[in-house]
Image 1 (tube, rainbow, N blue to C red):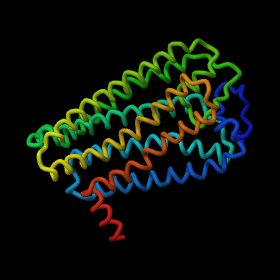
Image 2: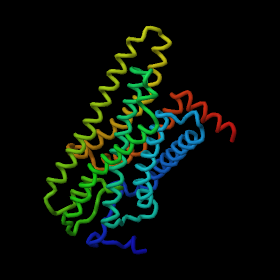
Image 3: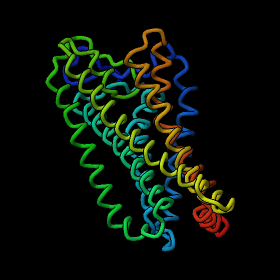
Image 4: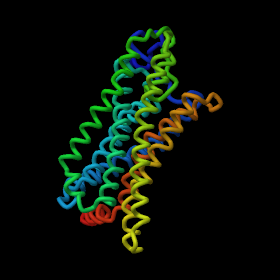
Length: 312
């Protein structure tokens, strides 16, 4: 019962308000939120199960897909259960350390997700532009090492964020108008100077997302050039199909993420509840749709999934 009676002045606790202005609709909002989350879990775990069971899918492309699904599961799981506790049970309290931990893992998985998308773009570049050396350039062991490098990069970039916030003084206003501990939302309730926090957050966004997008654009620019040089229509279509799923996933991942982050930082004309709804949707929609896109566009994976579903 203590979690229902927390006061904003409690020095060890923050209060997550959910979606300010839409408190009366929290139960209704929780319905699509929970449905999206369940579909996301089912779809991603299905892909992980099928790839794990089928030896023929133990290839670099599908290993990368499994990494992507794991980051999707981790990202949404770091946010949705707490949001549903707010909507269903009014459990708005979260300890300072719990808040910073949630922020850390959410941002680490987001940066890791971006690293995997870059590696997937490189995978398609090698598969189409240098197919004869694909099996020697991209082995499962090398993909695992690239995944580890992406994880280390994410941790090194993100670790300063909670550490900087940990040093900030938080006064009597400890209410966070959000469903989860988003970095800027937490920084704004500090009564200290948050210039460094804002600048470092912006540097991460520009450096990580900007660099990753440049590498992805370069890879797919070379891929498209190679596809246009293919003479036969059948080979042209086959090469294009191998990239379609990846391009759809990347557009779906980066577009809402960038829009949400930029509007949260720079736009003063958008209502707060719109910011918060967008911030939740961009963490849920891509994880929900990624398995569907790959299931539809990747014939080998689609056939294996259908085989397991029919068997059940």
